[in-house]
Length: 432
Image (cartoon, rainbow, N blue to C red; front, side, top):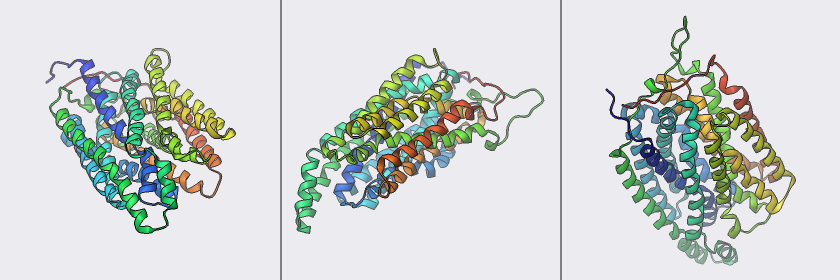
């Protein structure tokens, strides 16, 4: 039985708020890398990058369980539950970071990532199948703007609250030879994280309750994202019969890897040129500003002037060009080109996700979960960079990793998304 279709503007406003929230939480990882390295007295960038490892590996382990949960709860209740788990995770991180307990702080980040895994497993296919697949990239671009605005604000806000005067503090810690005195200084520094994360926990809890009782419609993926079956053939019965989905998961893996490299690792990249922490703590916001510009371009051009797969192709080419420019330059100019990778990355997620889940029908939730597992690229690729740069020149490592990833994205945009699909499928919006 179908209910009256709710206003699309209302639906997009609610989804925009959701994407703002998890963009705000996700893009805190850049300044958190700086925070944990100092607060926990970590002796290498590789150890500090456990922040992104713990956060993004949650997607790998929790994405499939999230699909099972969503099959029971539906997408709307699943989104509410995801926000609740995020609230618990932010509370855990704030509590244990204050006491300088790194393993338990990482546990808190893993819980936050788990909540986001559930939230993203629900929200991304929701946006893709609530309307025609050809305009899915446009809808994802709209909420992506909200996500990236949050990504610009959150690093600046958290840096202003907890990293103010951090360069002076670093020098003071280095100059303090007495272990007890140094511990007192760092204990005082670590306390700054508590109030912001407690406030986030409360706000996430309130939002979880609000989403549960909001006017968001429930959707049935088996109806809205149905397979188109040719005469004389039978409906596909396994996820393994959708090669474009699996290639899409690899594409998501490398895409999130380059996104996190450009966003969260840019501060570490800048330090390679001996730029002070007082400046590098804001670099993540510059990348997100470039992504915001890219989302605005995508919003007005896809699919009116170019298709989402064409946008993906040109974005990959742009990523290769900017990575090469960062490699052959140095200092602030090189950092500028790394920040511009945000522009190249902007339209990738809005294009890859709908292309990869196209026509999955009853497998949409599980297919979405497979794609969300690919977000683990944000854990693996930056960690590889942090480890290899201790042995090889950081610019060379950065370029090789980024160029390799963008080449695969280019392959998916040109050929990979069509693998196993004999014709272009379309989706029609229906509400229950």
